[in-house]
Image 1 (tube, rainbow, N blue to C red):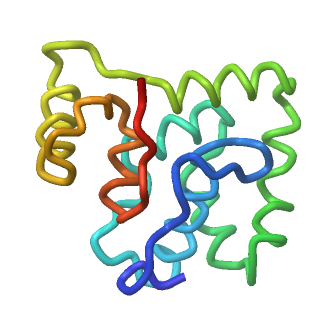
Image 2: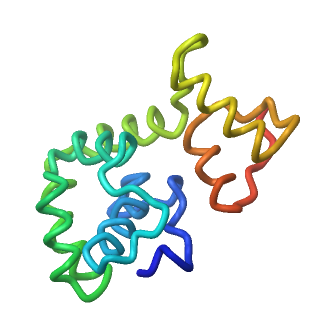
Length: 144
């Protein structure tokens, strides 16, 4: 995947049932190929999903470099996901997608600055998952 010319998958998209993981896999493939562009591999949101699954970022990067496609990388990832119950995965998914940084935090300040630059007036957008979709040019539905 060449992230210099295309976007990684959405934070909301699931890979092996886990949100954010498809995006991390895309970034790992791009990083392994030297085609990461403006993206960062093993950034804070990547670290969160990798920590949940107990996957080492360098091991995933190596696996991505050796894999031809999603099927190969799924073979690497699936045993890590299998260590979690479906309920644990669903709870983590909901918490990750719905996470709103604390009022007054640096994370909240950065989120608001980025959101306001990308979508002025969209005060309904309060999560990093939605802001990353905005940054990638994806439509974000109105939130109540």
